Image (cartoon, rainbow, N blue to C red; front, side):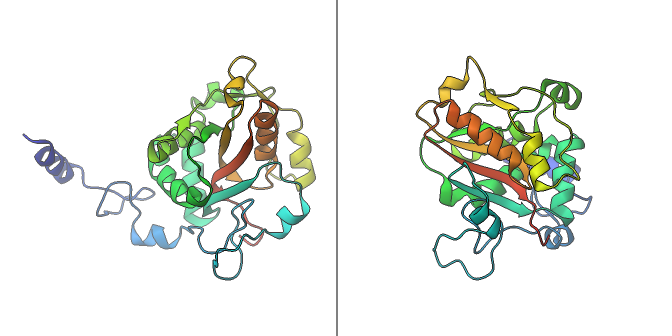
Length: 243
C-alpha cells in the first residue's frame, strides 16, 4: 500500500479532530470554527518590542506600546502569536500542564508567522529554562518543545541547554510588575560549559507566555552576558492589559 493510500485509510479510521475539542476538522492540527473564533491571533499593528496589539493599521512604521516606552527592555525586538485568553489560554495551559505535547507543532507554525519580521539568517533559537525540580515533575519544558518545533519550521538552529535557572522561583501569578521582576532577579544564567555557543550570535529567546516580560528580560540578560550580539523574544501568547 502506497503512503497516500495508507494515509487515506488512517483518516477513515482516525479522522482529524480539532486541537482543543472533539469536533471534526478538514486537516490535522486544525481548529474547528467555534474554537477558531475563540482564539485571538495577533495581527496588524503591534508593538515592535513585545508584540502586543496596537490600535490602527500596520503601515510598516515601527511602534511601541506604553509599557515598552517606559520599561527598559534588554531585548531588541519581540513578537507573540496569540492574545492570551479564551481558547488561547486553554491551549497554553494544555501544553504547559496537560501533557499536550502535540500542540507544539501547530503552535510553532503560528509563532513562525508572527516572528517573520524579526527573523534573520543564522539566528540561534534558545528557550527559557525550567528549574530542574519543575522539569523532573513536569517531564518536559514547554518552551523547549516550542523551540524545537520552531527550529523545524524555520530551519534555524536550536540549542535548549544554553541557559540555566539557578533556583526554583515562586509562581508569578498574582504578583504585580515590580514583584515579578524582583522574583526573577539573578535567577537565569548562561550554562557554564555550553553558554559560550551564544558568543557572537543573534539569539531568538522563546517562552510560552509573556506577561510583564520579567522572565524574558532575565533570559535576555543572561544571553547578553554570554556574548550574544543581540536578542529578540518570541512568545506563543501575550497577556495584554485589556485582555
